[in-house]
Amino acid sequence: MWTEEYEKNRFPLRGFLLRAFFVFVFIGLLILIISIVTRTKGLKDVSTPLQNEVFASNVEKMQTVAFDYYRKERLPLEVGKSTKLTLSDMIQKKIIVPLADEDNKVCDVKNSYVELTKIDNGYLMKINLKCSRQDDYILAHVGHYNHCETYLCLK
Image 1 (spheres, rainbow, N blue to C red):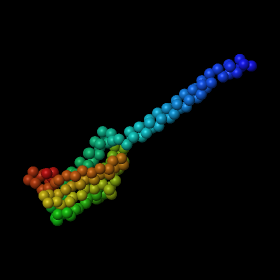
Image 2 (image 1 turned 60 degrees about the vertical axis):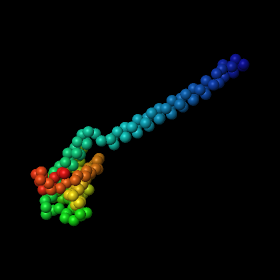
Image 3 (image 1 turned 90 degrees about the vertical axis):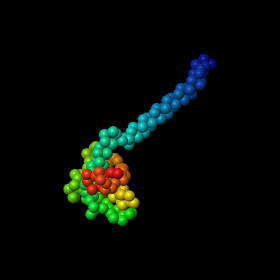
């Protein structure tokens, strides 16, 4: 009887330590899996070079069209006044084709626009482009200068 109890409880801490070890391993694996999932999810939100290149090309196309479109009669005359040309308007006027992102999804035609605001020494052009993954704008100081090939060009 004494030998049975002795054999049974020979290392009473052994069972406890074994259970604690498995709990720590389980928690460690759980933390590792969660960190991998969140890291992978975060990578999807990061812009790729191709995405940036396509987006920049689309913004440049809108800017070129705006330089060709805005003539003297279409410019705001008073300081602080603006005129806006949406991507939808550009498509309807047949001066640009619908723009698509790197996933071949068409960019938002209502929220993508070129806005020209009269300032003291020229104009401020805001080119806003909204596509499926990216939404950004650029500002450019433009005016009518001697070196311009179109009516407006960059300073």
